[in-house]
Image: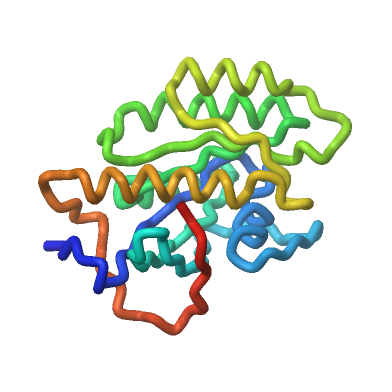
Length: 200
């Protein structure tokens, strides 16, 4: 049972989902390390990083962010991690219509999940000039499904923190307002990571 106490560090698990090459790894690196590298090997299966935060109310959080492979052959692995997630960011590339359609397919599957899992949509690579998915298309789609929407760029950092902060705030509000404890939310005893302040 999770102790809802500000004296304990709470562990939230967030998944990044989307097709191959939408920029999930760059998205993760920009948020956790504030770095960007155009050259990345494709993620094989699952990888993850941690980030520690202190909320405005003093609550300490440790965020475990999972970077999932976008290739079709890894989807069965990815699906096994979804059930244990507290939050999911669905990422598409604004220069790729296929990646936008891929997000729509993920939404159909995620609608069957428990409502406790918080979800946001990120339209990535808005720094590029050859976009094919407009802001209006992304906004309309997100409104229809009821998920928060952010236009982002892992390259220049646009709205990356805002996207994560919004999702983390949703997860935390669900956590503190829930009459029962969520077995997917754990207490972390590892305080070795550097702490970042100012979220939510």
